[in-house]
Length: 110
Length: 113
Image (cartoon, rainbow over all chains, first blue to last red; front, side, top):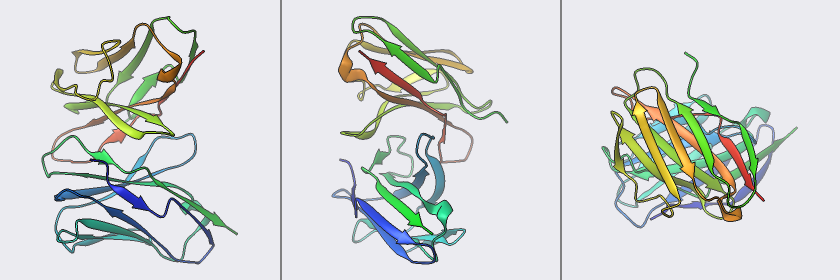
């Protein structure tokens, strides 16, 4: 099943923070986060494999809670370059069939 | 590294015509994935290959869709006959070695009139 992302869209001013959530009805073993700019291909941000693990990419970090079957992506002190659509992909460690959420569109304004 | 290469970047065709999309994965990558992206359904996995062998094609929507990977550096996705509902952006992605991430190509935007 496709993971559920929330919110669908968020508008920020530069410097503001935001949280994007990704939840699944199935047990999660891995969560992949990608960002896609308009008209471009999705670009990998990070992967989380263990419960409660946090990772970071620039000022973007993520957490993964196995028990709650959810992951959250944190955009801290957002920059204009953070604008885009963020997708979470969920699957097993060796599962090549990632299921992607519908995406969260982030718009950062000056 | 040139990254994943897809061609054409844009394709406009008429209903009933055959469409062939092409992909060259990153050299050394042993997995290749074909995805379709639409506003309604998001990013869907159509099929994936490992070492040129199709592993799972359960995402292929119908018999009109077929995919091949004759060698490690080339794959095709064919739609015959095409229909307007096939209009979408089709991405090819590859992964290899110990990495678990996918490198996506730039996509092919297909419009079926």
